Image 1 (cartoon, rainbow, N blue to C red):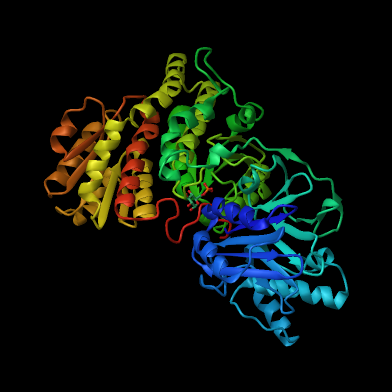
Image 2 (cartoon, rainbow, N blue to C red):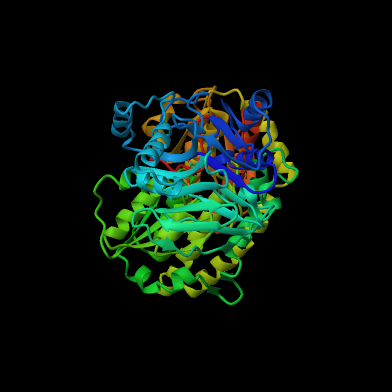
Length: 617
Ligand code: G6P
């Protein structure tokens, strides 16, 4: 978590860093800070709160000139979010200043040792320990900043992306990474440092993504020198040409990124299957799967590891894979999987799903699976991310940048990729008849159009009216069965995340084993009741809610009558093959949570306590 930005060049650093931090706020927004070097002095402003609060603080406290600087937006781990714990952190001498994304796990013994040597600490952070450790090394061993950083990092256990600046060497910034992402943008006589490329996309498309255990000295006149932290060997860095453009990371007329991303789903799903789904020819072409088809076909089982919304996509995949490709699937929370000594064999295929490609638990689960000989396939959105690099093979979702903290288009594009894989395997294994296979391919191709039909202004207005009625509810229940059970979980998660209303997702039939006790006239119940998929059984569940006076908001197939008669509100989605219904039923639930959150005055794109990319365990 946390976003870091640095600039070294000929332009004013302040506006570049502040704008960059705003783009990285998806990574955390508990506090923010900036350090600028104006040619003679270091000026630091930092505050609890968001980057806009930092701007106010900076206006009062510092002059904003200087062409070199570093900035930070924080998601607190060690030390509560307050002004003192905000980054950047100074070393005791005031010579060094650091920003850090990650956790130094052995900071306590290191801190004790430094205190014994006379160092004092203002904050509760592990980061302040690291900057003083670097200072201590630099003084005692009489080495330059780069070397001091390297020696210090060899004493550290944990994860980090750091940028360190030394007043005595004002033409360089030293950066390093282990477990947290770090990109270096290379311009004309200027350099950018950031957690991802979005802060510098309008200045350069040339980027070096540091690998784990690499550090770099970025020097104005001399460029970037990358080396391995542990063995000191020099690395010839790969300079990547970015495909990202500015438009993709701006709101484009929408009030929030989340809304923009909801509306991007028809195009995003198309981008996901573009070049892969050739419905007319009856072909699915996915290099990562095709090149490893025997591994998939010989697998005893597929284990899906993921967190959050990606885990919900994995649950949908469980239904799709088992049904279409007849292969056993287990879906695991990566955080549980990594620590429970799981049984993993060489005949397992592990599919890791992650929008950011940086989630620490998922990354650790992948490493464990690889150690045990499993073949690991990644489904990521962020190109070049840690998970994309760590996996044996994979497929990108190509959803474009997702900036709203609550995941939307990542979910539907993950389901799209997983559906493609299941269909590819079903065809290769012969578990699907030819005619079914062709029909499913054509249906999948139609999904973007059908998603667009669920996003019409009429549907949106209808959902706004429903949101008005229930925006003050304290609890919500979400029910679904089969393919739509994970959608119920995802719908509830979206509402919790952005509106802070307590919500539970349940398989509809489980309702009678507990949640039914909660139902009264105060309880809105969102039921996914599409015509296929245990329709009659869901209708019975709706009757059970109705007879206990619960309020029913049903997501139904176009033209439905039975559920309509029983429900307080219905939202229609077009008909499709049952396995693809989650791609449609999810959409109104995203809009419902969005509108309720807006009406409750919540910060939709930056909900409290959350971060988009969770790079700590
Ligand atoms: C965080 C985000 C969620 C996301 C989860 C997993 O909790 O707020 O939206 O689903 O991490 O992230 P990943 O990037 O691995 O999909």
